[in-house]
Image: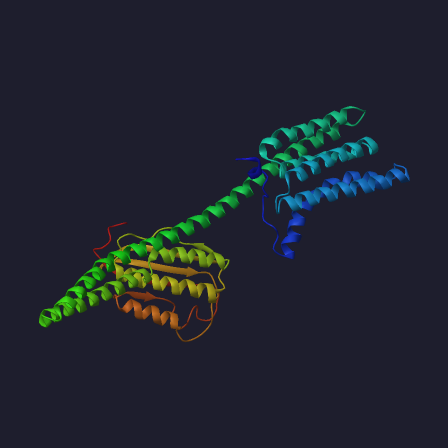
Length: 396
């Protein structure tokens, strides 16, 4: 990793006023340690000129510190700007300490934090101890209380190295987010390639055969019209079969699957701020038609939870079971919401029931309401079962 890659911002620029204030609060909360210099100025131990210069120096120091951290953690500043700012903070901290006394040693804590928040790890890991060493050496040069020096060493070390850890953590999070977007793009590209490959396999032979037979029919037409008619009939048969194959392929691409709907359920519930407990995987070897029915039902049930439940938690289970009538796959969607009151079943439940009827499935839901009856707050549980026959192995 080169130097340009090391000097990167650890976050993203705020996108609104609220984010700006949150970020300022997160950075500014650590200014609580500045109480010692403020108290020193307020006690009136210094001359008026000394107090005025101390106030000015403190404001300049705090302003530089806040701008450096706020700007650099939003969008990386130029390396020379960062280095010059840290050098300025260090020089100002030394000047204020030598001029105004022991209470100003706390400024070195902020210098250490600035180093950890803005410089590469390989630089920060030796410069933070160096800043602390300067703090200790300056504190020991005169008759300053040793307790104050000792009390500042740990916050300076902890604050500096903690910021390097936070910086690395946020950088890793950003890299993971970018990697996830890349994986999604690669998956979409792979799906397009698969579609192109399947269409080529479906249509390549048929279109080649149609072309050859068309040329052959054209040559036969003047002298052998009966044979040409037979070739035209073959062309019609091949083209009809190609159309059937394409329709079947498109239907297969559009058919919802349980793994896809489970992933979609996790995304939809998370986007709605609902804590989701959704299986990571679906059972394998589920027959095509029962899987399609359960996938549609899961999509409809999760949509109802997101739109109407007002729930804070939703649990989805998908369990193969053995019954007296044979093996079944049971899907349960349960939430802890209130739901919409009503007396008539909604279109969603009606559609799910109609789909289940095509595969002899069953639906269990609270009777007489579109979601939870009267909005009692006891939640809503939807349970569906579809027969599997012998298509799924035992799992219990």
